Image 1 (cartoon, rainbow over the protein chains, first blue to last red):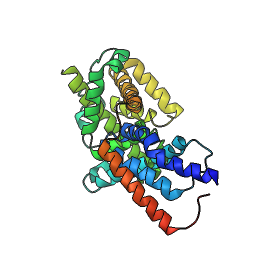
Image 2 (cartoon, each protein chain N blue to C red):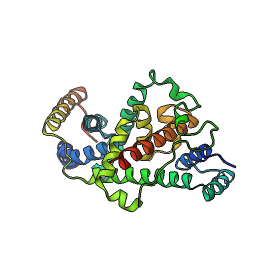
Image 3 (cartoon, helix red, strand yellow):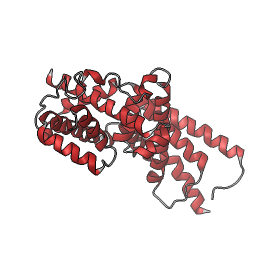
Image 4 (cartoon, rainbow over the protein chains, first blue to last red):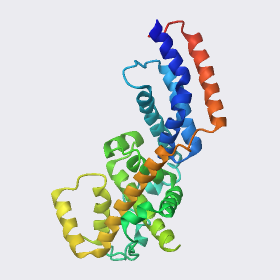
Length: 192
Length: 94
């Protein structure tokens, strides 16, 4: 009986104790404050609905597990919202990649330039800010996929399953995202 | 010999899957003689590292918190949900 009472009290505190942590976790992955708030809300509501918390793992660990699923749900929604617009995204050929390569399809027409020492770049706030801006500019579908892969660190199998796309599509879209980001970053970093 | 376009594709894919021995070999040969693609690879790897750094920074920044409005909204939603759940079943929690 005492255990039940403890569980109930802990649940009441979960928003206060873990809310901000969960919010940061979600924000790091969704990069949108409103979406992150939604993810936290969905998580805490699911936790109450579920009532399956056994007390075996720390509450934060358990809640984070739920949160990860909610984040994927939100990312999947973002992917779907673009579905009708960018049908070209689903083609194996890559329109738009031509701008990077010469007509012979072999050489770079737009060569990557030198950026400077990597260790220094990672330290520079402005570099990271420009990168974030470039990520914000990616088409929503590419952005969601890129985030799933790079931030959520989902493997290809999980990505294909969650987003219902083929492995080839996933690679093509990640390639596009990386090419686009690299170009955008270079333009704004060197152009400053 | 791999084209730069093919090399750039493989470089991107190498971040997501294991390349076959054949692909790895072809890419290595290309990178030995192509400075531009070597640069591309470093930059793509740098982007990965930078994204991960940003992620860690956000996770650890204690100034980032739920707004007061958000906390209130969530607390209200929790309260409604709890009442809903309680009225739905009269069982005790296990």
